[in-house]
Image: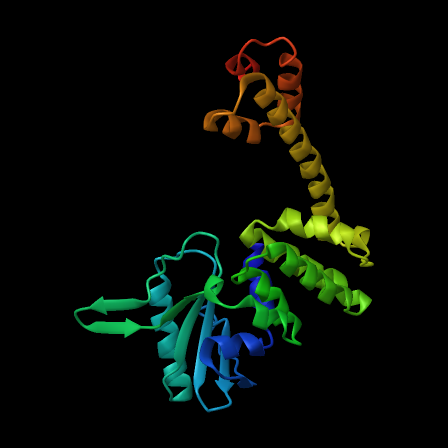
Length: 271
């Protein structure tokens, strides 16, 4: 998925404030480790910390049941390559509740590592960082007011040199999908005095065009719901689900039926 690529790109340089939150230290040196060509996987982040620890972090957006075996594979690689046992963590950034295993317990093998849900981290510390990568990751952390987080991130994006603004906004929009905040980012972007050449960036152009379409459809849904509730009372769950899933043409058809229908079922019946 594209947010997996975006997340990995943010770790091309170590996000130092995130490392302080995770392991209480900073990176002294980025380490590049790759398997032989027959094995295509490579760790997401391997660094030497200032206190000498070898640290390995994997990003994970799904509850992959094979994760423990991937981690033990990485452990073996790093231990052989550096002659030192790595400290390993998996940072879970997905939307679904965390359900990742953190260990292997078999007759001849016992292995464990730490799994951390990024939603348990304090996003305020990442927002206060001078490093853009830290700032963007704050969107995935714990927050009582996502709108304020988005506004602060957009202010940070607006302070970037012009060529870098669109790239940062693309990353922000992609990460927002993990928290269903895509529409909020688009809404707040329109309110911010940020100059971005949207038409020159295919992803941004598509995102804003789609956002305008979705905004229009959301307005039609809200209007139809208000009209139906005025006629027939509070909407049952089945009706709301049916309305939310409808396309624009169907919403228009139901709006016309509402004029002379005698029941909610009559309005929402299939053609």
